[in-house]
Image 1 (cartoon, rainbow, N blue to C red):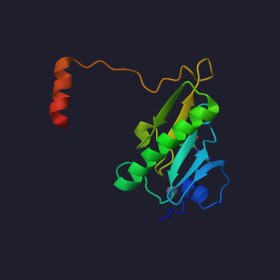
Image 2 (spheres, rainbow, N blue to C red):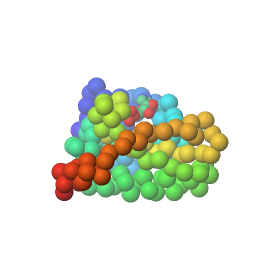
Image 3 (cartoon, rainbow, N blue to C red):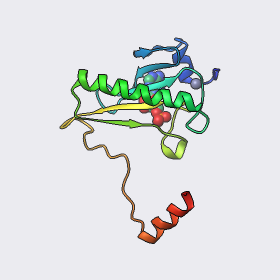
Length: 137
Ligand code: AMP
Ligand code: ZN
């Protein structure tokens, strides 16, 4: 299950070089080539799926378990002060590579990008929030 035009499928197949920090039957974990911080890594499922909407539920669960394991390992080794786990779906949400991946981003006090804000907060009235709650229930 591979997409011939997908850069992450090529990385998984070893056709494009990467800095691999972990590999098993289901996943390859590589350093992001354009990192937000020291150690920024990407968990790539080996089978090509585009996003959270199409990924197999069990693979998604395994990816989160692996994220926990690697975050723990990275905190021990890199001595980071915090950690973001991020996963983008769709262009409007910031996805640029359409092969599911989870970002593992160690965060450091007083480092470049330590003020990186992932979103600005909007204001919704209590009524609006209640309407959204009812829509989603
Ligand atoms: P996203 O914007 O969530 O789709 O994230 C895609 C990420 O893949 C970006 O952070 C890129 O820097 C990273 N990326 C793109 N090409 C490569 C590559 N060849 N090796 C490692 N990371 C890459
Ligand atoms: Zn792919």
